[in-house]
Image (cartoon, rainbow, N blue to C red; front, side, top):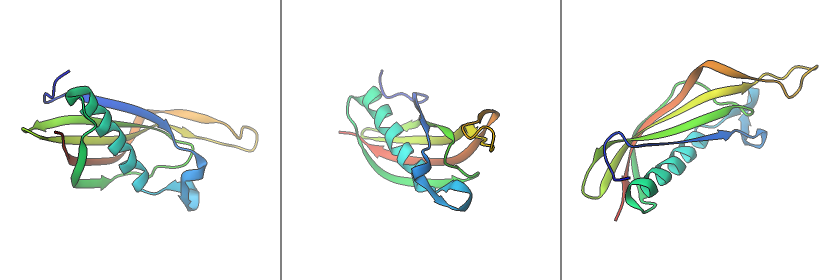
Length: 127
């Protein structure tokens, strides 16, 4: 694969309860930003054969909460390709959510439609 606009990478993760930081099992926004770094690295490897270096975020929007017990999907898409820079659009989507009850403490549900939790744009530099 070469670095072309529209190239994308996606990763899914279960959000462990050890990451709950606030009441209601809420997870801090930095968790999603960490996933954006991981998926940006994967996209750089796929398109440039190098992990790259994250230079900056241009915009971050926290649109919905992420909770422990969620399954999230982080996606990076190349939106601009420079000589050494790569501008990416990121989306963090909640695709499943824990739905525990006293009778079923491990219950969970797939969300249809999924919830967009965080969006961002950022720049990565590759050699």
